[in-house]
Amino acid sequence: MDPCNSAQDVVLCHLCETPVPPLYCDICQINLCKTCVGEHILDDSKLHIVVAVKHRQSLLVYSKCPEHTSKLCELHCEQCDIPICVQCVFSKKHKAHDAIDILHFSERKKKALQADLEELGKTIYPRYQEIASTILDQKADLKSNTEQLITALNKRRCDWHREIDGVISKLKTDIENTELNHLTVLKKEEDKINNILTEITEKISELKKEQDSNDACLFLKYKSRNEEFRRLPPKLIVHLLSFSFKDIDKKLLNQQFGSLSALSITTEKRVYTLKTPETNTPYLDDDDDELLKL
Image (cartoon, rainbow, N blue to C red; front, side, top):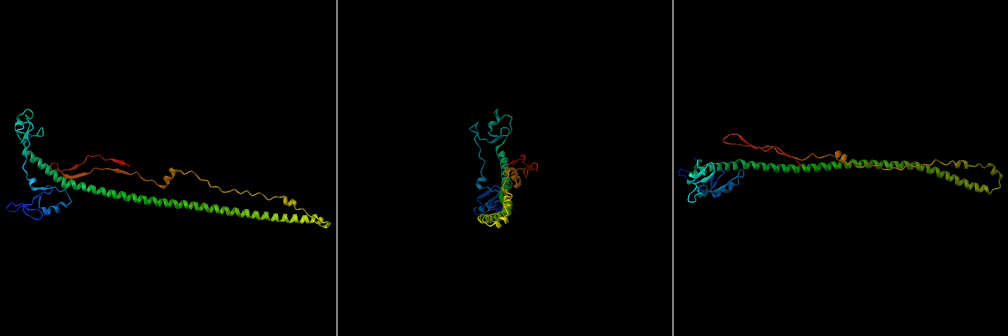
């Protein structure tokens, strides 16, 4: 038995069976009382359109004929696809045209409307909700990917800084070692020259004393060292270090550091899976695939 109707044809609320509910959901095709309508609408698995029962059961209102103002449009011209009156059928404009009762036409349209309404609420609207949810997931993935890329870039920067610091540290060590080696050679040469200067100073003092002496023995023992002192030590030439560098090749630098792949957004066809009564086959979207590069 239909739970919405009793044996006495009393209309009941579909949810709580309250008699004579004032509301009706056009999507679910059920009667609702004021208490249950809120609970019903909160079910967001599909669209709901709730109207007053009296609106659902209202009588058809005929429009006035624009050609014959005293007549109502009780027929529908199939060829012109407009409402017409009985008098229009015999006019030249609609002669030999097929005309059907406007009530029958309205019922046919109402069934088509009801079918569209049901499809929109039960199938199309939830499908778009699913698509919207997918976009939210894609946005979250995009944000996560961006954070991961930035983290990878920072790590790459630290790796390069560490390598550069290592190169600089080695060069500093080489400079200090070279300086130490040069200082050792210069110190040795300095000590040698200072020893000779000491000997020359002593020799000058000795000669000055002998110069004022009348002792012949001193002159007989005298041996000149000037020839020895005339042989000057070889000159030390210190070639100072210099730092040479090449201009930074930005193109090569970018290649070695790493590069980003091109961001692309592609589209693919979606298959609408609702089967139509006429063909019993899925409706296919005809949009072509596209590739967008940013």
